[in-house]
Length: 189
Ligand SMILES: C[S@@+](CC[C@H](N)C(=O)[O-])C[C@H]1O[C@@H](n2cnc3c(N)ncnc32)[C@H](O)[C@@H]1O
Image (cartoon, rainbow, N blue to C red; front, side, top):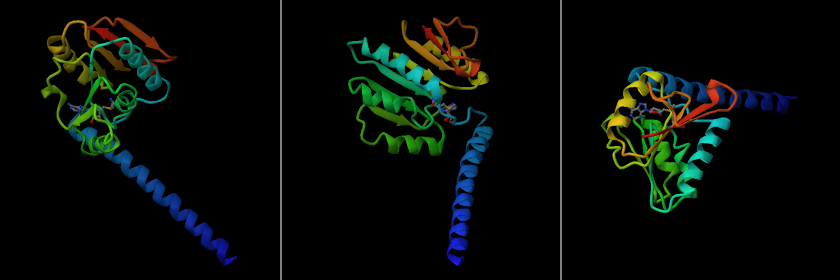
């Protein structure tokens, strides 16, 4: 009977610690985004994540010369990590301002020579040499970023935007996987 009570107490303790950890992560994501007036570090997920990776894979597969792929606000490295593993001959750069997502990405990419993460503001980043850019950012950030992309990216370069489209710009392709939450846009500069 005592053993059963101890097991129950242990289980309760584990559940409390798990709830605490999840709450801390959630608070970090919400508060840091609020302070910085920027998009929270919510990763691309589910079927749209898979579809974006597939879209990028088919572009990279059909290109013989080295491509530079950048994720502006790369979060936890969700999109770049699998692509960098699949395409060792292409170059991948993640730009992330958040302390925790940046360091987690650096750790996760430690064995990949073709993937680098930079902790900086993407508005101060040179994107003129980039062939393909990923963005998953709030509408207000997209509005500001659209001008930078149009002014700085080279001709024929591509942008894949998860959920939030570029401002006043007709996409080359719009893919909806059931709802606006599962939609991505491809733009050609
Ligand atoms: C919604 S997450 C997207 C993560 C990743 N691109 C993905 O699709 O999984 C947006 C990320 O952009 C970062 N971010 C927002 N504004 C930024 C800025 N000006 N410079 C660098 N990173 C920024 C946030 O810290 C956050 O991690």
